[in-house]
Structure formats: C-alpha cells, structure tokens
Length: 316
Image (tube, rainbow, N blue to C red; front, side, top):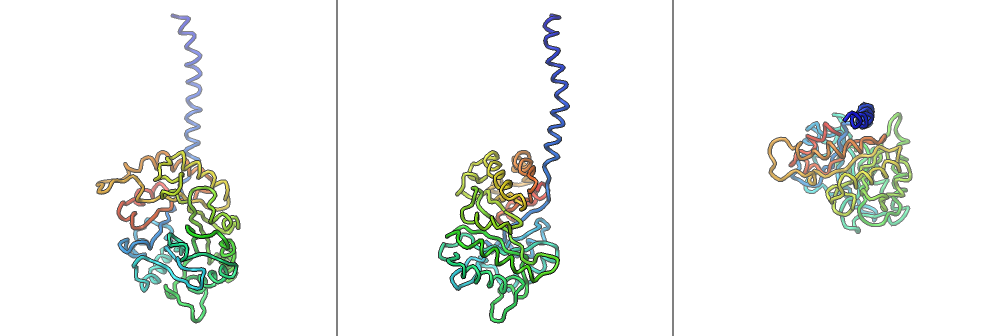
C-alpha cells in the first residue's frame, strides 16, 4: 500500500502545482476579452419598427445605420425606407446625433441587381457626387435632399447584388470629401460584408484601407459561417479570425440577427437564458481580437420584438 501511495504522490504533487497555472491561464484568457459596449443596429426595413428617434432614445445603440439607399449607378438615385415617412427622418437624424449616436446611411441591400451597380468609373464618381450633395455635407442647387439639411455621418457599403466593379473608386471619391473638414472625418466609411472570407463584392473596396469599421454578417442562410445556419461557435470563430487578421487597422464588428438569437416566440421573462451560448462561448472568443469593435444587430424590427440588444448591450 505504501508503495502504491508513493507512486500516486508525484501525480498529485504535479496536479497541485499545475492548478495555479491553469487558473492563471483562465484569468489571462478572460482578461484578453475586451467588451467595448458598442452596439450598431440597422434601421429602416419595417414601418412597424418605430421611428429613428425612438430607436435612439432606447439607449441601446451607439450607431444606427439607415437602410437602404438602393437605387444608384444608372442616373437614378433613391432610397427605400419601407414605409417610413421621409419628412421626419431629418429631424430624427439630428436628434440621434445630439445624443452622440453615430448615424450612417447604408447603400445597396437586397434589391434586385438592376436597382444598383457601378457599371463604370464615371458612375462611381456620379454616385459619390449624389451621396455628398443629397445626404452628406454638400449642398448643390437642384439636388434633392430626402432628409432636408440633416447630414449623415458616413456611408456603409452593404453590397449584396451585382458586380464588384468600381466600389473601390466610390470609396476613394467619398473619402476625398474629407478635405472639406478640419480636425475630424465628416465622411466615415464602414462596410457590412457577408461572413464568408473574402467577400467577393467588397474585397477590392476593403483593400483601399479607407473603411474604419467592418460589420461582418454572421447571419442569413447564404453562408456556411452564418451563426443561424448551423455554423456554431467554431464556424463563426474560424471566419472571424480571418476577418480580424486581414484588416487589423479596422474595427471588426460581430454581426448577428436578433431573429436568429434562439429566443422562442412569445418568450416571457428575461431572455438572457436563451443567449447563454453567446455570452459564455462566442463573445469571449471574438473579443480576444485586438480590433474587436462591438456587436452589430440586424435589425431594429426584430430587436424590438425580442429585446435582444437589451441583453447583449451589457456583453458587447
């Protein structure tokens, strides 16, 4: 018995010596994760989501992205806000900005391919000119401003249709307008690519290095890396690591859909229990990236129904 005990003792001593090291490793891993508290939401896709002002007054979001400016590139320029009255949006933009909430305008979306594309370098220049004079800081007589004298803080690229051509040129034209500002960027550029790396439609534009934020869309059924498409934490993190490594100077956002959050319809009480895998597994992994920026939520309508951001805000 004494011989067997002596044989066990080294293993026990080794285990006791390793436990503090394991604990330190776990603490180091926890310390590496860095929540930012930044939550971005897309607004404008459903008239029943409430006004832009209401979204900003929830206190849930640090950025709201108006979606979408979805007709461009062929001499026509227009946006689709799914039944929201344009007459009130301008005042709401100013209200949100007064609360230090960034307001962006997203171009593209899920329209048919004939609604938007950039067939030439000239069309890229023309679209940039229209965005500048209709939605940003420009003012040219004869150019209709749907939101009045309100100016959005920047442009988000959500290109889901058509050719990838000339979006890099559009980005350069838009960034060029920053010469009219002193001490700040008046035209901020962000992109919302699909999670599959690289995104064929936005890769060339992103290579310009002009995009300060990238909202990677880990939702929808079109990509194997989509969280709601069965990718699981492993599949999301594998794609996430590619994005964060490819664009180290940009802030990378984890884009998730409130409608794919795993919250059952009609759930009562706190929804935190339904998001435990996000909290315990996914977020700690993605937040280890030095350029983790926050969480992007698609979209305000689903978020309002589920209360998703009300829980995620404290973890982002």
